[in-house]
Image (cartoon, rainbow, N blue to C red; front, top):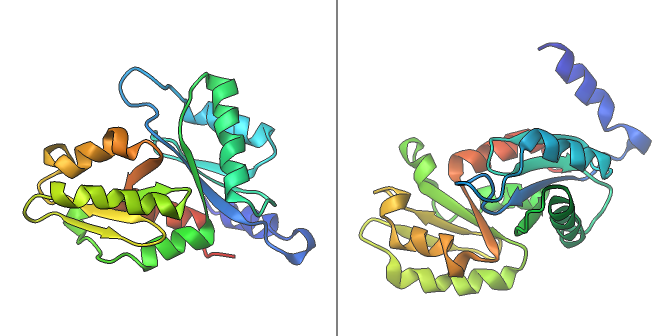
Length: 198
């Protein structure tokens, strides 16, 4: 509605410095029967824990929020503990700053075309070193698939679909334990929710 822009304009004015914005990504929640994390309750728990302007996206465990902290790792640890205490769910949490998420989109080694947005996975991890382990996906690639690895993220394009992809399957298994993936369409939505990096 028209009321929203007004409120948002007002929100970040404390002391003239905008509050740093982050995105939190939970791994493997609300898939199948296990690891239920209802988004509305997660949002409420985040707000209660002192994060501000929390907005969730989709059902797959994505939130954008403001926090004065400058430590994505500290935020990730705190959110993992919050999810454990509130929902009894043990999960990998990856936190990226708005700037990092913009970099991940802007430095992608290839950009999927519109039809492939759902078939291009972006792999997020807290440690840059984790990206090197993803080289193990290279021999699993099938014709037409592409893997790109930067210091910020890894990118896997599966034109035949993720279910048909050995590399995609490996990411959901042991290899992907410390990472979480989102498709390109979701990453673009998160970037839009974050707004311009501070």
